[in-house]
Image 1 (cartoon, rainbow, N blue to C red):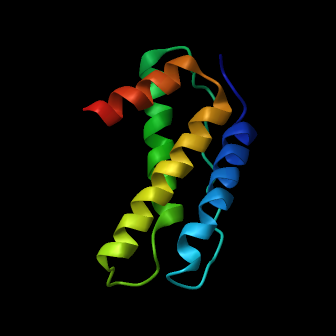
Image 2 (image 1 turned 120 degrees about the horizontal axis):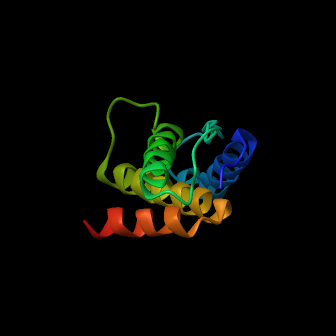
Image 3 (image 1 turned 180 degrees about the vertical axis):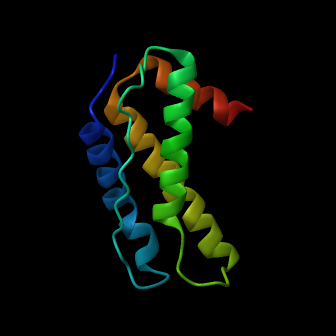
Amino acid sequence: MTLPKTLASIALATSTLAMVPAFAATSDVHVKNQDVSILGYDLSDRADAERVLSKIEKAAERVCRLSTARVTLQERKLRTQCAEKAIDVAVGSLQSPTLTEALRASRES
């Protein structure tokens, strides 16, 4: 099941919007979007699903990164929650059982 790039872009954009309230209490809020190309990947293939998951995780870390050099423990916790939420929303929106299983396996290890 190969999906167009726009589907992943929409998924990650949605996830970044979902994380905004988490940062509202700590700093200026800037919504960031990150495109994730999944063109050419077969999400029913375990290896491809893991590659796409890695791309989604890296993009989530980028959109959830705070702009300040010094990060408090609370901000680090919020950043982690933001990234996890962004990943969950992006993976869920792609509706791939193989990708969902890859996410579950990565969180258990």
